[in-house]
Length: 305
Image (cartoon, rainbow, N blue to C red; front, side):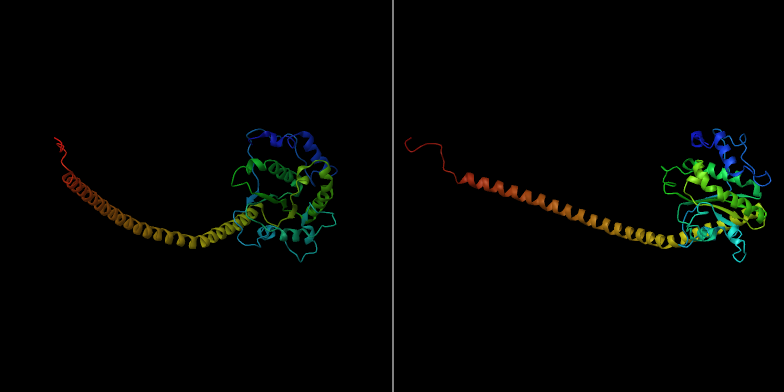
């Protein structure tokens, strides 16, 4: 943490109380745990760790979607009756334009320099705490991706969310409770609800967090390998063109050097010819002067004398 002022609002007890009152009040700690006022007080130079925060380096295909990148982790059993409740889009929940969140994930095409951030937990009661992690990262975005640096000047945060493993019934109960409060959260100045970034609550496949990360790591490695292969594929003809250009340039320089040497020889010969011409002209001038002096009348005495 380099600039503590970036967390000046969410670092206050008042803001943490607003989160707890909005989402945790009226529910037992086994259902939802609030944000501890003491443990979440950040100080200068403290370090942060986030679960799944990545930037798209290169768009491998024009149809690379967020759902495609998360399928190895999320519970996408479309045949299940409860499937639509296992992925909830908080930013559109309860609105007229609300649609199946899975379709929203499918329509969210990932482009070069897009940012995606998901927190992952095994405990359904920790959802609010994980949202706090998202909120912290959102507030620190300009520190992590400075807009004045070329590498991050065009970055775009396209999606955030929490991935939860645990009882489906408990997840659905907590997720719907949070979704119903989400619109009210904007009025309470909850930054995550006001930021305009799509926010998702997702249920994960029944597996351990460790295997979750392994799946994600494998998926990202495959994506990285695809990026490398794509770059190498595009660079091969470029390298060939560069080699040919170097070869042609060498040939051109060799021919140019030969032409310059020949031109130097011609100029030397021309200089010699000019020097000889000047010498001949000087000789002719001397002869003319001698002849002219011999043709002049003798002016030593006059007739009268």
